[in-house]
Length: 229
Image (cartoon, rainbow, N blue to C red; front, side):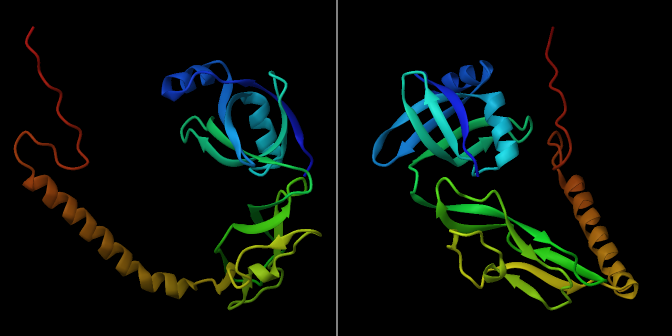
């Protein structure tokens, strides 16, 4: 994976208030740490950082140039996102050196098509591997081409690029192939699904009926309080 050059500024404001002001300025609060050095708080340009992550993934290597003259290589160790806005809230960056081995989680993509009338369960969508910090793959591939029911793809079956070693248990299941249910099987389970839905509806009705006066039942909005003029 090629490195992405990105500028940064030292960050002097900390806490929730400081982080909010940093984000309002179009930057992402971040911290650099590792190699026994004192953590360094920085701010990254949000747009450039987001573009790099979208292209290279969560293991994108960054060549960071801080305005105080600091130049380092770093890998994202933990990324916090806003689940609603899908923006970056904070990033922990691990300092690395060229030639240094790191252990990271890498996404696994399934390739090929399994046999007809099968279902694929993706048991684990990432695998732990060890690689040169400057050569971490953006993804790994596991073939399910022609796989029939009963076949299980394990970590040992995943194709690893040269220089990349598996750090996970070789027997860790990555994907499992099962037979797709027939129309008869789906029809046979329908009464159980309907019964479960009826029981859930009855429980909600009981909770509503038992709710004390003035106290809303679970799932119901609270009544607006009246205030005197």
